[in-house]
Length: 339
Length: 136
Image 1 (cartoon, rainbow over the protein chains, first blue to last red):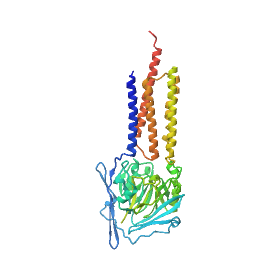
Image 2: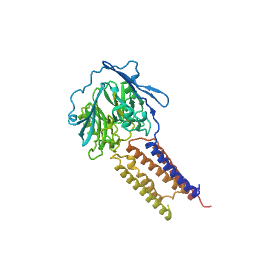
Image 3: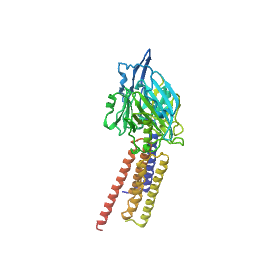
Image 4: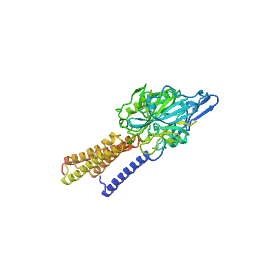
């Protein structure tokens, strides 16, 4: 078989042009071109304040690309009714918070939030100590209200403003992965299994952790999961540190900015952001982060997306110092609506 | 066995493979500086592809029949495709994401290398047959 040299050279040149072109396309497709995803409607939470406060269960409707509709647990015709007689923080304030500075507070009939700035692990740490009347106050939002796409990102500030939030923190960047359980605002958005461990906030205000490979998203949903985040690792279980810097993930071994979520008790949560990658704040490795959560009294704690994504927002402004100097656009956040 | 002029070309190709391997090692180190300590096994091992597939194979060809033009053209294409696949996989690993399109590089690279391997074996068999045929 013989090929003319000119044709051969042309073929070789063509191949390498295609290689460069395809490589460029893959990079743009992954990092720049927004694509895919399903639009999520916001949950409707109706709160009627009379002599007592009646909270009707939220309704979340998700219409997928194929037209099917899944509806969250709040669609029951029986309203979820709770009576609020004013929220208080149970127990005593952890010593680590007493030694810190209160930089913000928010109080409504259904939400009690105190924002602290403390020092831990050679870093500035921001802690939102939150007590809610019901787990339905803890909401999830996606950039452009779209789940599952690529490069569909917004800053936490933008998402918070768009959802009339009083508080927000970046969460698990669920759209970043192609597999793994996702339940948001009482709707199953993804049921494929990943090798990650997840955390679920149940409608009754309790928090459970789970290994995705050992259960199904439907089973977790049937237990009443209102939110399920899948990033990890799990930091604290039953008040004991379970995270390890030797879990095989480099990002967990090294000091990094961190965001996380912990449960102190029923309807009592800690949202935490650790600054990092600066002279003032070195960041925390995953074990240090777990210790911070334990020092805050968390019985269960879970690591969210960190690094440049770690962002906490309160009452109109970012409270931490994102490591890239400005807010990184992310796929989703957890927020508490202003009531 | 290759001739002296062919050996010169093979030496050049071995050197080219080595240079590309060094480039990939340097790329991994520089990328690591901006990756905040996060590493990827794919990016760390990418240099093996040109080192083994380029340099080592070129040196082996000193002792084997010189490959024909098609084999010589397609083999580096396979190596380049695989190397780019490893680099991209590394970039996505470090960023913490997955992209199925990267598999295209792995499939294409393996297919190209396999085709080249088969073509070279055919060439070996043909040249052996020619040698064993008695002259008319």
